[in-house]
Image (tube, rainbow, N blue to C red; front, side, top):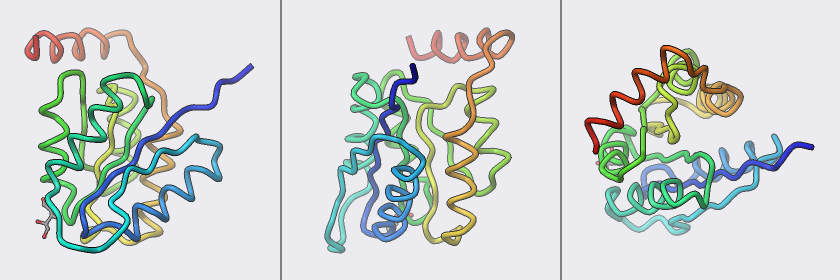
Length: 149
Ligand code: RB5
């Protein structure tokens, strides 16, 4: 029996359309989606949206997260301030797969002003379809956790 995996998404105003497209794409792949917005295009502040998604993942309310802003950088920085979060910005599918397999990243950040929609979907697929490999990579992730502690 497989359990449906839960994915939380958030963004700032720069990435609403891409975020919603990714939510639909991930839902079609079988993920349970929690899209925490925002839903309207008024200018907003990426730190609060990064933190909100990160808190969901850190609390165990979501298995993974995908967050977006214009570059993916600012919202990633905010998310990584939440204990237990390992978030990387990716603009290519290889990196998106590797941050799951080697770094046990639990949030992917994408820059909506950096990558187009087709490439973004390939990045999302690479992230969502990969699994953490553990082993020597687990030792290194434990070292990251020790820094945080
Ligand atoms: C908003 O203009 C922009 O600064 C934001 O989306 C993001 O790129 C910040 O890192």
